[in-house]
Amino acid sequence: MSSKDIVFDFDRATRIGLDEAVFCQMKSPAQIDAILDNALQKNAGLLLTRLDPDKLAALSPANTPLIDYCAISQTGFFGPLRPISSRGAVAIVAAGTSDASVAREASRTLRHSGIEASLIVDVGVAGLWRLTERLDDIRCHPVVIAVAGMDAALASVLGGLVSSAMICVPTSVGYGAAENGRTALNAMLASCAPGLTVCNIDNGYGAACAAIRILASADRMRDLG
Image (cartoon, rainbow, N blue to C red):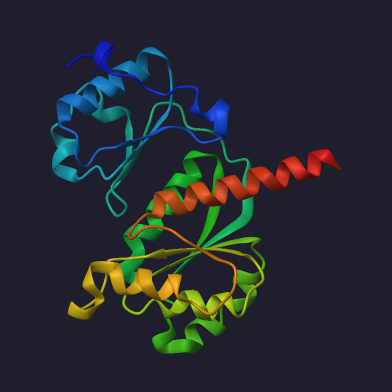
């Protein structure tokens, strides 16, 4: 496979305000290298998601040094990276340290778009005091991404305590009845806290993209006066 075989959506950012990302999980190292070669020719920066360490090690020696890699989130920044243009708009709140990989995927996706998010981890409702101690910090952010597995109670609790736009991400963390995140997904969908937006299981990338859309819409409204 060569770079000529890649049909990449380089105009996506212009069209909808979101860069195209490379989902690496089902791609071979050769396919990923072909995509990176194509991006390099256009001097385009890319976000790589679900890039595990073994696949990273199998990439071309010419491409690997150009990747800013985060092992926790299994994401990589390739090529030019936008400078930070926004701080304090988004808080990513994760129930436990076991949810950190999904939370970091959201954080890295936002950073790739020039948004620096606040990351608040290990504030699950099993120790409710941990969350209540951080409520003032969380409320300062107009957009909150709640990341939780198990019974995903964090989403409902936050949804009843903060007025921010709430984007919820169920994770596959939990014992047998958690069903690899299906229980958390159903709990978030069935939440009695009104106005929650719910993403797919472990989809930190999708949650970050939802946050980017919200912030971009708010900017357009301000421009309209």
